[in-house]
Image 1 (tube, rainbow, N blue to C red):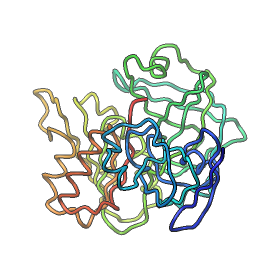
Image 2: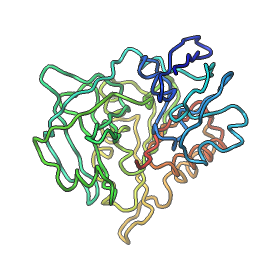
Image 3: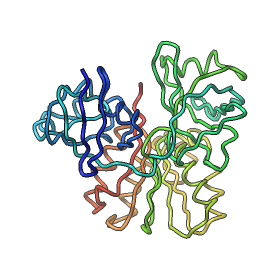
Image 4: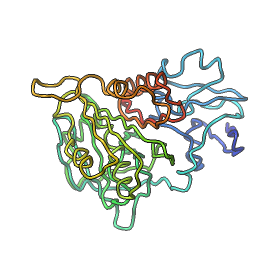
Length: 332
């Protein structure tokens, strides 16, 4: 049985079909609600049900605790309506005119950047281009119907090939294939662009926070920003265990020499004896450098614990919640 959903404050309406989540139906209707992981892990899609009822679906308890449910909150990526709904959600207008496509791609190039990081370049059909906002991601469509999400690392201006940075998760169904059986000229199917992690218009200086391959979408955003110029101050804090895990550190180091409005701060949590740079957790390096974050925007990308800690701790330094944007790399 289908149910109608009305979004407030915009008043837009859409229909959720049987076995669809609220988010799936909204995206099908080209209504861009904010989301990140799409599996109930990150909380980016959390919103309020003003009237009606939902089945909250499978999610991480810490992302939607019982007290949130009691307040009428839910995760639209896992919630399925059990009646007509009126929901309160912030729509992302900038993505509404970008079509989401399903396309075949050919693996054009593979390059191992670290022991557990593979850079992958996909070639689209000759008559196709994927329009996207820097920071968005694509899904690989697997033969068993499952999806695997990875951020685009190239900027929209350079869209001949799609660049991805894939970290090997031991025992991970898809990443085991990438590091084992996948080879150049293989054909894969993708769906995208997806996600609401992109640069908002503002005059505020930006702090980028990347953990591991969370650098990929930030690379896309920064490359695009440098291409279009501007003098907005931007600082990248990139955290990893060891120097080898900062698999493309020479690139932001080069940006720092070329652009007076950009600074790069690498942070290692398990450095070797020869490391003289910053150490510890990457978000704590930001806390050490900024006593007041009230005048900043933050864009954070990495594992859920890093995202959660950064948001919590940055808000204690005055960062407005509305100025914290994140893309949570939850394992699937």
